Image 1 (cartoon, protein in one colour):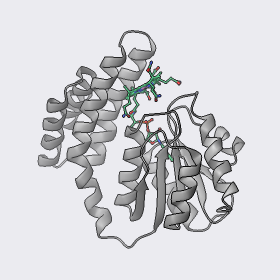
Image 2 (cartoon, protein in one colour; image 1 turned 90 degrees about the horizontal axis):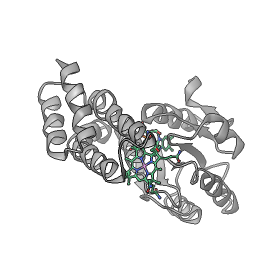
Image 3 (cartoon, protein in one colour; image 1 turned 45 degrees about the vertical axis):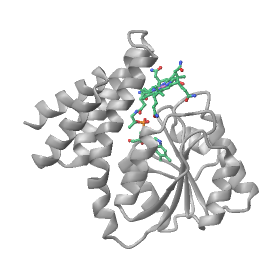
Length: 225
Ligand code: B12
């Protein structure tokens, strides 16, 4: 039953069909499919397929934009369900989140924020195309515990280093931890730029943030948690 639904979700993203995607998200909730499963097993694989086809020149920018619209329509339905749990939990810490300068990819970062909120973190999302100084200013203003920086392009990954440096310049570390992620980002890259941690997906980001809040001083890689 779920498999059929997941296949339809994948296809709705590939087709760039927001209404179908939203209807499938509703159907998942009505039939008791956990929202995170709908996202991870249904919609996200569709995004990956679109990315692959774009990479091979079999899909074009408008197709990728339509796919993103479909994904957003599904998230609009599933997001509040994911957040409900978090509202009942005590606050674990404050996270300032954003996509790095020059990069407008947001979907993965929004998902990370949603899951962090669902697990009791207070999340402030700065949006996309955010310069390092802005991360630092907001982290200071909110007394943030963690700054999370997303990058989806190999060309914008280097700006994650700029965020680490901005946080250092503002004198916020080691109290404020910087974590990085995004499709091209690796644990090795996180270490190279002096970040405090890396996570490959939203659930690992939650595990990483929880581990950092337990005051582990060294670089933590969620992959190995
Ligand atoms: C959707 C999409 C778009 C949408 C973005 C819409 C939006 N508002 O977000 C649009 C159409 C706007 C777009 C534009 C472009 N895109 Co694009 N896009 C994608 C696509 C298909 C999916 C990305 C996505 O949403 N994935 C789903 C989410 C759930 O996964 P995720 O982002 O990886 O996030 C997860 C993890 O990485 C992690 N994570 C993410 N952030 C963070 C942060 C922290 C702190 C942590 C711990 C973890 C974490 O957790 C997330 C949840 O599990 C990817 C393909 C791909 N496979 O990634 C290409 C892709 C990223 N895009 C690409 C390109 C080239 C572009 C353009 C340059 C195209 C162009 N010619 O204009 C522009 C860039 C414009 C810019 N300056 O940013 C390339 C990048 C190539 C490269 N290596 O640099 C890709 C890989 C496609 C490809 N195969 O070529 N894109």
